[in-house]
Image 1: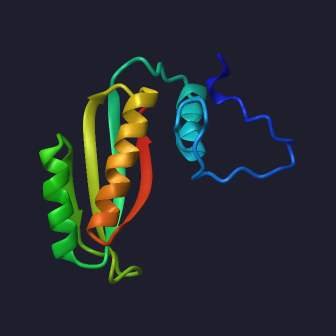
Image 2 (image 1 turned 45 degrees about the vertical axis):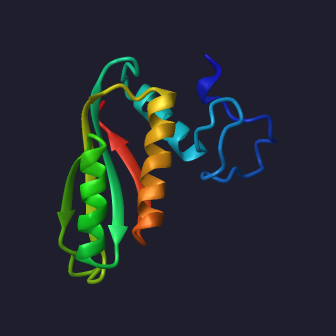
Image 3 (image 1 turned 60 degrees about the horizontal axis):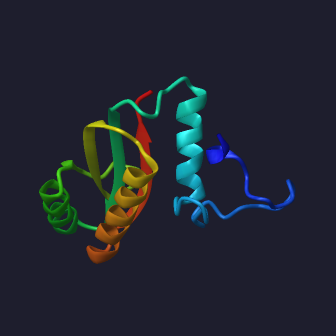
Length: 130
């Protein structure tokens, strides 16, 4: 299956991880995560726990974004800043029993990036159980 093969660039040319694959419309960094899951033995057609990370400059913004995410079926948790990152409120959004299909990953990425942009935050990415 050619889902996780490199684009037809020379092996020495770097690929922007935020650029999207022309075939699936997924960011290359998302394809890398799916590839890592597959390499670890995950059956990508089976449901799994998926966690997404966003960061906001204040609690109010993180709370507002969390409410929007909850309305879209995500479990959201706003976490106080760590001592080494005093002005960074984490919003952790989760989905349980989710199939990490290309459509789901693309839609989640689009939604969470827009959520971060709308509320003045940064979308950092995601991880999933094997």
